[in-house]
Length: 234
Image 1 (cartoon, rainbow, N blue to C red):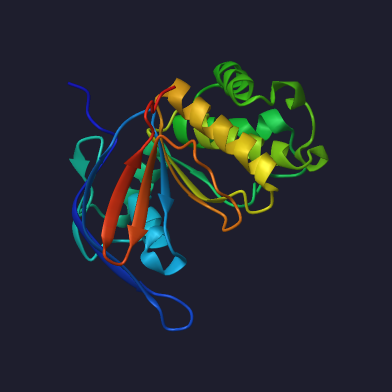
Image 2: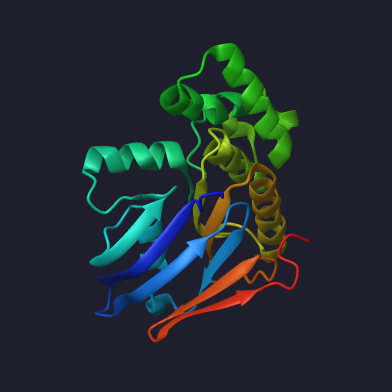
C-alpha cells in the first residue's frame, strides 16, 4: 500500500498577526494524497498561512503530529528537518527569486547539484524534462533577467520540482499576476504535479479566485471544511 506523502494528527498551533489578531489551528487531522492540488482558503486571520507554514515544516506546531512519508518529524532536530525539507519538499513563493546572471536551465538545475548531487549530464537531462513539463523549454538558454511576467514564475516552478519532491508548498500564488495569468499558472502547477505525483498545497493572493483545485480546504477559526471537485483528476 502506498504511503501518503503528508499526514497530520491533531495538529494545533497559534501565532500573532500584526494588529493583535491571532491565527489558530486546532486539532487538524488530514491525509494529503499524491498528485493532488490542495488550496487553502478562508479569511486572512483564519489560520491558512499558519497551517501552510506548519505543513512545510517552517513553523513548529504547539502539539500534534506531522508525518512525512510515513515518518513523524516532531522530535527531529533542526538539521534533520532541514534535510527533509530539502529532499522531500519544493517551495514556491510569491516572487521567483531567480539568479539573473544564470540561464533558465542553470537556475532550474541548481537543486540537482545541491540536493540530489547528480552529475552534469544527468542534471541536464532531468532539467530539460522538467522545463518541457512546465512549458518553458524554449527559454532554456535565455538569461533569467530576460524573462518576463509569468515565465519567471514558471521557471521558479520548474526549479521547485526538478528534484522530484513529494510535496510542493506554494504561498500567495498570483501576487504579481492578473487573474488570467494566475489562472493559467495555477493550471500548470496542478497538471505538472499531477504528472509527477507531487502533492501541491497552496495559498493564493487576495485578488485571485481559482475553482480548479482538486481539494479546497477552507480554514477558519471554527475549524476546517473540505470541498472536492466532482472529478479531481479530470
